[in-house]
Image (cartoon, rainbow, N blue to C red; front, side, top):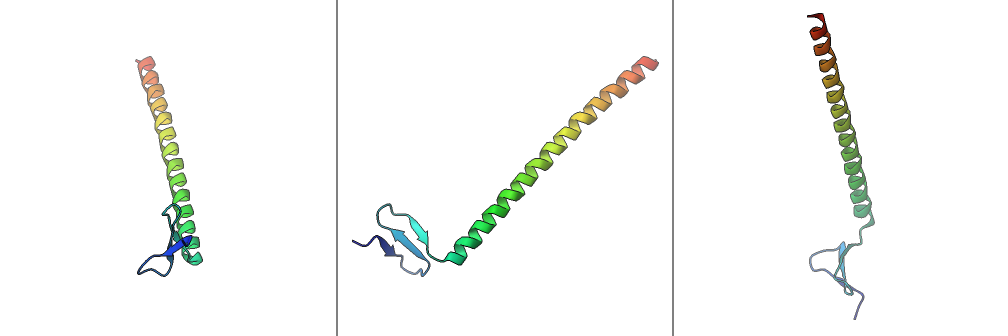
Amino acid sequence: MEKYEKIKGSVSYIRDSSNRAVLNTNVKEVIAYKERRNLAIKREQTMQGVIEDINSVKGELKDIKLLLAQLIENRS
């Protein structure tokens, strides 16, 4: 039995007969996929950083509001 089986209708994909995994044999497609995946990861990390910054600003704004309220209360 062959280790890999050709998949009908596909030039770039084969199936590993030992675990039934589908493998892409086109190196350019694999590299392009990895680049897209890395870009998506970087975008997600950037978005998480932006969310953390926004939450930090929200907390600081809340503190400022409290201080202003205390100042107004002390002036009365």
